[in-house]
Amino acid sequence: MSDKQSHELITQDDLADADLERLRRSGIVALDCEMTGLNPQRDLLCLMQLCDRDGTVTFVRTQTWAEAHNLGVLLLDAAVVKVFHFALADGSFIVKQLGIMPQNMFCTKIASKLVRTYTQEHGLSALVRELFGVQLDKRQQTTDWFSTELSAEQLAYAANDVGYLIGIKEQLEAKLAARGLLPSGLSYAELNTRCQAFLPTLIHLQLNGWRLGSDGDAAAVFAH
Image (cartoon, rainbow, N blue to C red):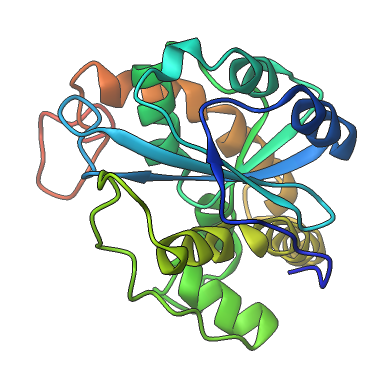
């Protein structure tokens, strides 16, 4: 996380014009969503936090997400990389609530699973602890994000969830590049690129009711 991190713990119902231009100039934006649950067909999107390369965090909170015009412009801008930790979940809520598919997504959980094969811990806390030596405070994770007023503690937690993502992406990409080739002849880096590009398809599958694949689940799309 940059020492320049700046957030006033103020939410707005859309990105201001100046924030949109700042985030587009950054060329890369870390994003995270807070929801009332993990089912995009049932649960609500409550908050989106966005962090630029300099560490400035902006909060968007509205019950009419489809009317957040500037946020939609940013999400559709393919020139801006959108870094999520769990893009399948966040992306599904964005498609459901805003009606648009984010362009140029990067999921740090996917990259972690491809290169950190020495561990089963791929959560954000584990990545921040290993790569930055910082223990995140996750006590606000399961609080009520739909409450009328969000507390300063909730917003500080939300800011921390995006503050490290761009640095995590860069470190994981360096690890992938260093791994070289897989036995199949494809590089770790290229495999990651292909997985990231497949995210929109995975989101469409999930939103439309297909299970993606798990041991013993014969109905899953990628099961035997």
